[in-house]
Image (cartoon, rainbow, N blue to C red; front, side):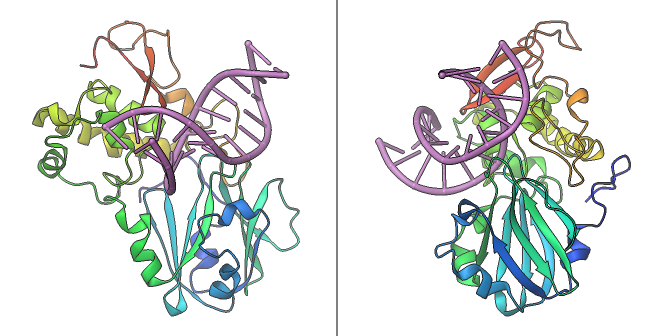
Length: 276
DNA sequence: ACCTCCCTGGCC
DNA sequence: GGCCAGGGAGGT
């Protein structure tokens, strides 16, 4: 992971709060948050009393390995945040999951729109889950261009849709896909299989810088402020976005008007002139 | 490979 | 009062 020079994202990080500590209690306050658990009643028994061995991440999935082979998987959806708090700290609204450790701290998942979730897998369940099908992490394990090219060959899917497919690359979301394609000068609707090596290389070159810039500015809080940093502050990447949300504004490169279309069911912003 | 659904707060 | 945004999974 990159340094986070401008934004201190947590008062106390999730990883130090969990790693090496034993889980004392788990509370799922909104049943929907455990909808991906085959039997939601399994969650406490699979976690309580077990020590956290490792805290990792693939794309947008946070993966916490505990003793006896269980893996706690958390996803923040679009409006989720994780907060490390002391037991006596007042709870924010929409605190939907609370994981307490024997160090008397809590990791709280706050998620107004409840697109996030928590699930605890056995090794077999993990192997059968969508986690096992995730592509390489877009930041930590970005494949070389020839490998990306090979995986795009013959595919008619729009490149934007492919970038959002977590089985292709794990970690890119709607806003960042648009920014990457704008910087790479590739039309989001181009069929993946039609891209030539130089275009794929251009896309690849932009992936890490765009993600790093987003991280450095604390992510992208939109006008509705549903996404917030763990401490409740807004991320400030919105002001740096070059195309996302800028329909009708002038392209910074060629002054054409930025257009908005729907691609793969998601709002998609691009320059009709310099993205080809 | 596509479309629809889930959910809620903020906005028109 | 209704629309919209996001990520992922399920269905067609």
